[in-house]
Image (cartoon, rainbow, N blue to C red; front, side):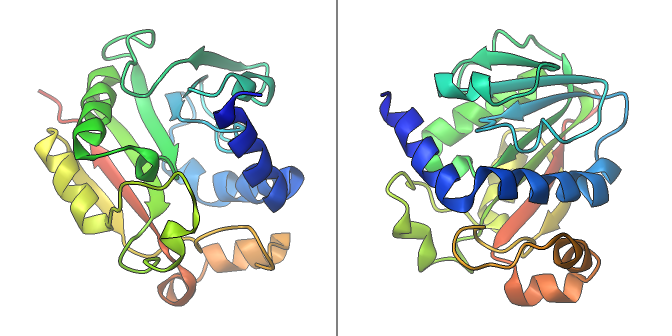
Length: 220
């Protein structure tokens, strides 16, 4: 089995694939739907098993991942491309309204590779398009961060925002503490608790260890 596919399989199955899908369905319906226009073309970058792209409502769905096994998990309405995030030429320039990525940038080897990814995202976004980034905040998850073998690049909401501005983006939203670090373990994920959590930003400041940063490609 491909090493990446094996790593994904072990990690996602340890959290429970059905549990992840159920939580992401609520996240999309109760939170991200307000940030994604209903008619938008959306690209899920490093889509994993399609937790986000399968559950978000939009006009056109695209997904990119380096893991060939990801194709089996995205919905039939998703246009899947097997590719590295440093080469999005198959998507096309100025072709996408929203790019979303979750828990991906920390897997990049260094800032140079991150810069390449940000440049590729900038190219595929339409003017005025938005890049929504969810990921572990090294300021609050500095202990757990290194518990994953494939974590390389530590980022905070501040350092990522700076990198995005250097890539030409404008920052429109930066939430330092949003979701808990992981769904693994005994973290409660009952539907009503997830819905309640999303309605209580005060809880984010206690339990949140992942940032949410949204950047916009200028209209010019």
